[in-house]
Amino acid sequence: MKPHSLIGGLLLATAAASAWIHPAHADAERKAAPVFTMNPVGWVRKSGGKTFIEIDRRYQPALLGVERLKSLQVLWWFDRNDTPEKRAVLQVHPRGDPANPLRGVFATRSPYRPNLIALTEVDVIAVRENMIEIDGIDAFADTPVLDLKP
Image 1: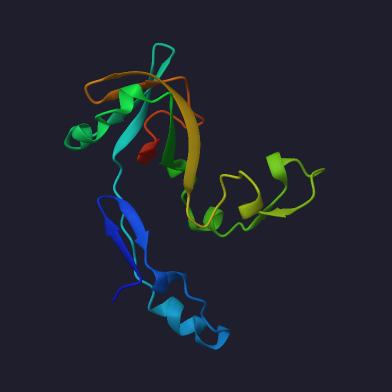
Image 2: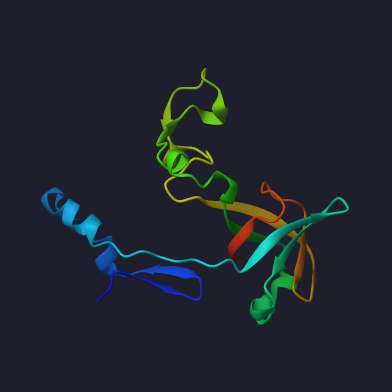
């Protein structure tokens, strides 16, 4: 049984994936680790002072009920930060300020991460067909959106 699977753009982990691995077996486990592919469900769009999430038309049925939500959590990809060098950065000074003590990226909101998944909570203004108007997002226009959660 594979410890991870990708279904509909969502990464799922089984109990086997969360099991503790003895350090002596860690190298073998890393070599056997599966590769995952994720495809965007949509993109951030910015136009005329407004911000939208444009959902790929094939996922439009998944928007049923979103118009009744006050907010959404948007999982998106730091696509403009995706280089091997930036993925290798594991410690940063928060907010890029050397006066702040060094911290691991998992203890910060740094865009430098091993996996460039970002999370932003947004307010839903309106939903029209495959477009969700939101109050704003800390992502650039045309950034890929991986998933939405209430």
